[in-house]
Length: 373
Image 1 (cartoon, rainbow, N blue to C red):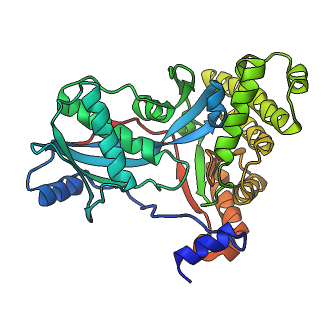
Image 2 (tube, rainbow, N blue to C red; image 1 turned 135 degrees about the horizontal axis):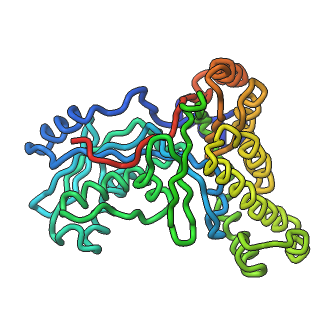
Image 3 (cartoon, rainbow, N blue to C red; image 1 turned 30 degrees about the horizontal axis):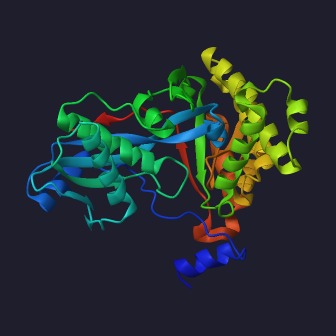
């Protein structure tokens, strides 16, 4: 049975679905992307731009409660060759061919163009042509959509002679301000960012990222965010809760109490992690990451596959492990001396999965969005 049958078996709980879509081994070549643009539209592009994906290290599950999140830009991302169109149309393509207007990629490009028109970045009536390629899996929790929006927005700003965009959400802000060897703290309330040292190479450390492809049950994210909003309506800002036992006693049911316990304690864990980063002690954040991962069970996360990947990495000597985002992505903080052991142990844990086994890649904090050509 093909991919659809595999997906339905996963939904029915018969076996895991595994990762979705491609994860290329190398980034799209900017010259080849420009050439693909020229061949398709018969004019050269105005340029080629790159925006990175991002790894949510901590805090992303409580964004709705207006706390803070900690992120790192990834070495994988989205690249866009872009140029103006005199006919006023928005056309998006991949190097392999045109994309349907309703496809996810074309929709994101069109939304970025609409925003540029509204903000006066791009003159109304100016159309856009874009060829998009990526070495970032679109269906993992690694910020593919935000990277596409950011690369397009930066290209449009350059095209219109405007200042670089600020970013409309946390993921876009991270993609814009990130620097190599740094993490980015984002205040989810006002989107203010702080760039912090996270130079894993200096400590001979890596982030081992695992895309398991697993998904929580449908609607879980919305349900948890609704619960946090309701709790904030009772307690006020959850980031400001001082007396946690008293706050939990005010919750109408045990489920909401568990969500509040996670949200409040995550604030303290994140503050501790930020403190270590400020002190250049980022090699010591592993136990905090693992504590955050375990605490996610109060959110009915992680998924079983993510838990298996994290536990396998931890048993093999990872310094810390955590689920990232709301989908089936996990990561481990690993020293070079343990990297192969951790990778091998994780792969053995999924040895019976075949093509549905997690995809593993190593990363360090990378640069933010920029123009390539």
